[in-house]
Length: 198
Image 1: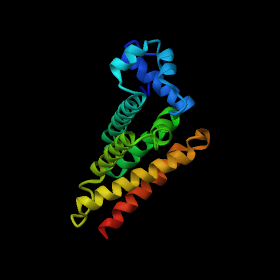
Image 2: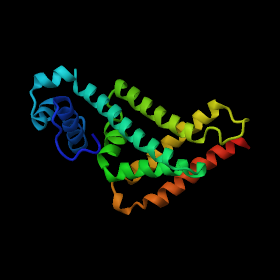
Image 3: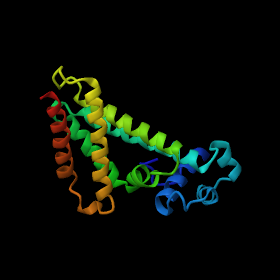
Image 4: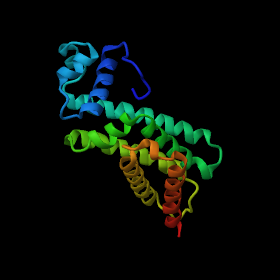
């Protein structure tokens, strides 16, 4: 969904794409199912054959977009051969996606907040998955005295910190120097984990 520039061909994908555009343009609360189906050029029947509600559409969009972002971030960390730069490569890719396609940051970090308990469960799972990726990136590089529980907690905190920085800057992407921001966030991540070992 993130990397599409035009309406897809399959009905379900059309609905997802239209939902993404409407939610991030007009906001979740101000978007109706009718507006989504009109943009997608499908019937309401088709919508309800694929999704039980606008809320379910939002939840599925969060899952799809998170998967796309995680795949891109994982690819960046896997391609980086130097262990010390893996977290930086992942953070940089995440920032690039969020600022290059504001829809991603808007949907994941703004529009989906406080929609419902079900959406919050999906958001929490997305954050846990990002934290697991950070955990996997640093795992094996820290002293054995650092417990996995401690690493998981710090990983979640780092996801929160990175997301907060994105939210504070996503309305002014031209003013953001991706590399500088990624390096600073990487230093914070590494510093947090290094202090666990002390």
